[in-house]
Image 1 (cartoon, helix red, strand yellow):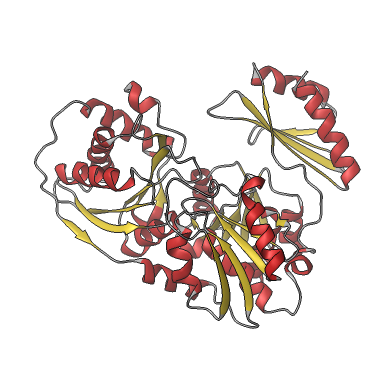
Image 2 (cartoon, rainbow, N blue to C red):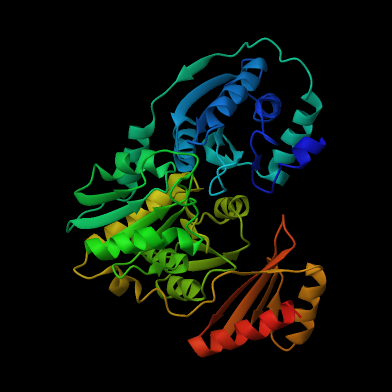
Length: 450
């Protein structure tokens, strides 16, 4: 692979500093190779392009369009979009697509998320490596004549209605504080929520790829502080925090406390199982053990998966699962083309709440059963050696290597995974009570950092 593409091609997308690593030349070459991979070159079809609000995104969208058209493919531009809006367009129009975004990364980054027709994912082992290798060979060559056509299509209203058809919100009127983080939820949230009988308190809806208020990464608890304060001061029913491309959503309860994504996974799973008894629900290895417990209690079939959207989407297709959740706030829906949507997850939470007279904390109490450490990162010189040390130390306990190392006991479990891009080990611990969780957390951290 050409060194420039090797530096930016990740497991599930292309991502890097822009324009230093990701520039128009690189993206033009990518567009040509993408058109060949999804078989739309030489007049055989079209691809959808959407982009976020980052400063380099419009230029990269033009470069990508030029690359596809130079190969003889047609282009449908949907303009400013969230990633789940791009997936909706790919699913409804049955066309391959590219979303130009760096998601939750800082302002200096950009990237490309790609899918085949019907929003089917393209990851490193399912076409992305092939595209990157072919694109690398095109770098430095003159761009051929642009033979493909370009059309523009307004899609945000269709996207909004599609989500509301899947998860209508009916019942009492809610007050919802929404922190878009100056990301794409500032474009899509109003389109969706304005169609409902809600009092919406918007925060940072202005599209601004420099992220002047805080980074659009709800996994970082420091980015939730403003939202938490606003929920408390307004006496709101709940708060919603979206990441930069709005494919992830985090929920804040009425007290200002974050709701664990595992609890949201269990809630949404219960809603689907009430309609489709016996259905399959996916949960990744970091999700709370409450998720498979609750799925089983509701008559469903839980299936444990590795972390990562391409892997989960493939497993959803294989098992015909109706829904899947990740600890990172990604939620996947069979009725949304197996794709993830933060907004659709938020609608399910609001729909469940609006049907009750209680609070979010009361609603979620039944779904959040066990205290967890959250993800703790440690810098290590030799991740493999550290993991083997843990294997030996906990040899008397159940272990598996589905994704990293998971060690399970009667009253606790932990998972340790190596980062794909940094010399880090990521630890997650859960216990039946706080003292147990803290004891195991500290013990494992001591071994990792020894």
